[in-house]
Length: 372
Image 1 (cartoon, one colour):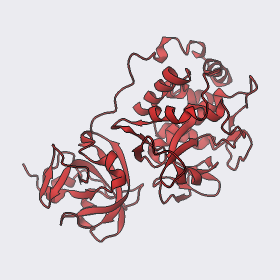
Image 2 (tube, helix red, strand yellow):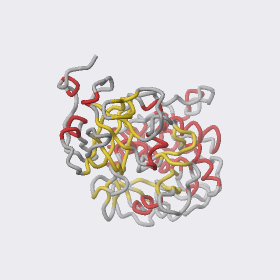
Image 3 (cartoon, helix red, strand yellow):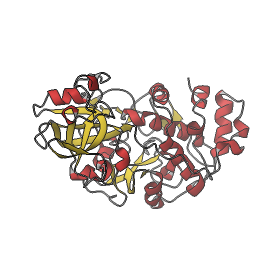
Image 4 (cartoon, helix red, strand yellow):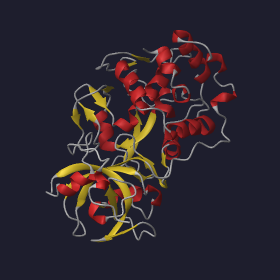
């Protein structure tokens, strides 16, 4: 049944068209003026003609239709989104039929596509939720309830930090060249096993497009390797718990900046902001970044000839073995809770590579027990 035009927009929130405040689909339909805006809506099918949207047997990966309701059937209430070739492997419905019903943000020109209200020349996509849930970690992998954290139970403050350090210390170390293959598994796109998800852009791209060329991905040290000057040596320099695939040019922009709120939005990594002394990641990975740094501050405590890495409330830490900004990281940890992708990544690192865990993924409550 086709719903009345007004009813499908009842729950759509109006925005300003920015990445942090996207247009609803209805706003996108009503502002077809060729301006570049961000729109958020639910994937409801693939447009194949002006008044035709298919919901199965998708012919290719060239387009999606968005609506303000995941059950919308009236094509007049849909926005047709053209998918550029670089995004088709992650957002095309032929390859990713599970995207149906998911909430997606897209930035592009609000202009007609298939002679219908649409978005063309898109520069950014992000999946926000809905659709088929990400699979839970392999239940055969040992879980934290197997006694792994027994020595930390009941402790708080410095006693907890010390206990956790002793538990996760002395992990199996990888060479820096081995990190490439490990990241292909730890950061695999759950919707496309041939791809990895890049940390700051959220872009899904081929596992073997790593390198130094434009739009290649490389190995980002989330705890900047100059903060302690540990480089890429085995140990902190190759620790998978804080190494992530990122776009080459975005990695260069982040450089060795501390983390904090504010700045200018990055032109390629939309939703990320930066200035001369800090970097703010996109909302959906803020907590991931925080928990990686919490791990590093506990894992590396100055024993066994290793550096003592610590968090502080500063930026511009330079080559000192400190990273900030602690208060922002604690805030991000609360705002962006642990998700299944983090849990799965933690399991893979534990079971296949380093044989240690990030305790703040398993026990998020321990952050406030150590850092206020």
